[in-house]
Image (cartoon, rainbow, N blue to C red; front, side, top):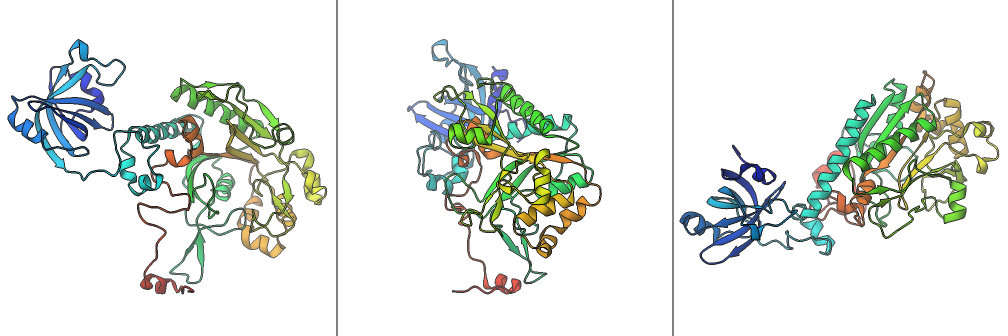
Length: 471
């Protein structure tokens, strides 16, 4: 829209006639005059329509909340007694000279100019585009953008390359259930959606990228429970020619930078971040993501910390890892490298329960916000891991042959980390769950209530895929 001025810039246009566009927030008809609050993505302004603008006053009496308007008007200073301190445009108002209705709006199912935290969440998800208009959701989504932009800018200066990895990939038994996608061309065969970019990021290290990152979509077909989402976002990172300390140091600096740049009102309790071993955490706190805060009532207190020295393997619990093959499963992922002093036991497959991995988790206020490790970069060591997990030699080749072959071609030592980006933003924004910082989340049952999915597909589509559904 030509010559449009954003609400945030009205203070720079006092005495001038401007054009603004946005949504009616609230309207107050006082007979001779009409007042309405008007908002765009940058803020709000109070508009006043005076009786000397006859056409504008006629339109103003018609408008309702959430109507979309183009408004022309003169930016005036408010009388001293009406000034609202510390509020955007609290010292100006717009004297409306013309109104053009761009779109009318039905009555919204909940108030847009109020915090929707206490509105029924299913209703909010059904009308997510309306929920996104609210002040709190606007702030959450825009702060998420700023965090991601800071990450990108920071890592660019550290010689990282952002690389997108495939969404259509291969189903491999390495964690939760895969979402699978049937192939029309190769009937009877399936792609899988990535649970994480784990294998691709390691293959990028084999490819000589050396420093990679990605803001990555991850999909896991897990049982509905708590704060899980079928799809979520990871900040994913991998580095070549590094040891554990290198990866941890870079991530610590990045997290400190995010907080100090974007959340100056928040205080990090301890720098450098404290460290605790898995064994110490379990003995002292009873869990592996302890809350280190000295004052748990302080919303602006951030207690970061590292948990290290995890056991590599644990006894299989089939209910938690349905794809587990043998009596042992991994605690984090099968691609971790043991601590150097435990490598002989891995290679000899002995004293398995006491093998410690190079895994490191970053925790914040009692939540795990990220985890990573130094990886096995030698194919013999990775093969031993899969043997301990109970995979047959032919299955290892079938499922992970591409990784083993890559490691035979000169793959450097490497390691990395992945943050749960949704969870980090949730904590920084003081929100109770990750759905509050996602633009279009699923419900706790994994449903998209706005799109009404998952949904059935047509008989024609099923026939093309050569799929028949049992009753």
